[in-house]
Image (cartoon, rainbow over all chains, first blue to last red; front, side, top):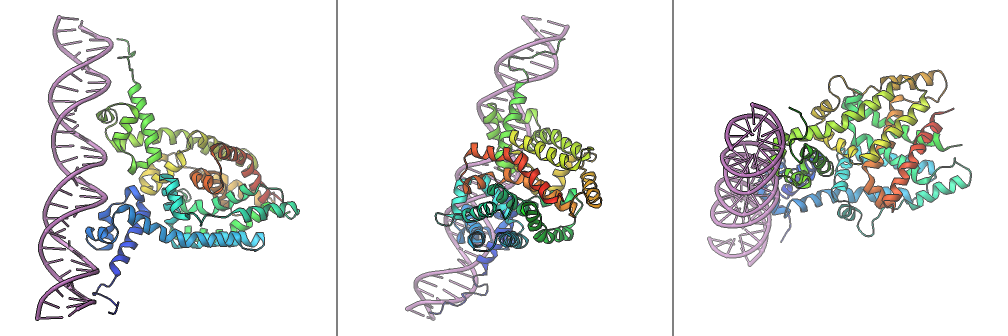
Length: 208
Length: 208
DNA sequence: ATATAGTTTAACCAGATGGTTAACAAAAAT
DNA sequence: ATTTTTGTTAACCATCTGGTTAAACTATAT
């Protein structure tokens, strides 16, 4: 009993559904997404959605966890690495911008669901044992401050600043684009610049 | 014919609706909000919503514009004022934090709707003649750079950084609260600190 | 008092939406 | 070859939801 392809379409239906659901969910949010839209986008019958993924909630969960569970561990690894502070900042910013260039909807998606049902959502993403561990990063900042290598700064605010500057422009993309008259190309260019602009901005602020 | 109160309830129904709609819209977004929820929250019959505000779209528009149209001009005034750069930064950050302490839902609301239908939404908020005018602010930065008063920096990125650091923590509040184990009091404290932390962080970064 | 204009409600309606069903088609197993 | 399993569809259903209607109620004007 070979487990090769069963029909012409193979298992691609499931994949098409996931891709379609990804797109619809992330652009319209959970409440705004229509199962029919997802089916149309995937080019299949609506009933198939329920065949592969019991209901809307389940489909949503699969789609999202798929993305989140491969990204957040990366960030955690950076936080917990032994890199020098400035390099760590640079790596963090670059890793995040990588992710958001590939999945421009993700930050929006995350914020959306975090607001909808914080506890349930955050549990799904990080689970019991996959919590973000900024502790080491915060301690590292504290150590550098005490060693007199950088200026006095509250590590929490530094972390908040870094995260905010990195993520927010992607969430507020339409606003920035409109208010600063940027087309998609120009916006992408700006985000590429931020790979160095943000670390430089931070380092300029805290270095002595 | 005096135009005083027509009945016991006076015009409070309309106000109750607006308050209720405000709450529901901002917590659940346009798509997630139910007219029935709004009616329940206001303690009135659903049909009254349509009596006072033709339909959901109109109600939404009124609720939102009410908030936005009194806030954005304030920001514009700061942008266009003749304050020195550092003071302007401080004022901008403080004005924004004021607004978000009062209306913690607003930034989320704005982001939500901006993503739903950028053009229509941004037109409603800023209209034809109420566009944000960061130009003067950007030029001011440019001037200070050229005068050699501050370090070389792209004004656009500086603006993005400032806005991001100010707004994002409010949008991502549940995430920060969970990941950094902050209760509501601690979070509010942190945001109060940011009134000075953010300007200091920026100024430290750009001053020579 | 009675008419009038404004306010509020219960009941209802049409369309959208998530989800189900039963039948059919294609592979795989026997 | 035929039976079983897996994949797919059209048609359908129950419920939700935005919106309407017609009737009742309230305060004021005449």
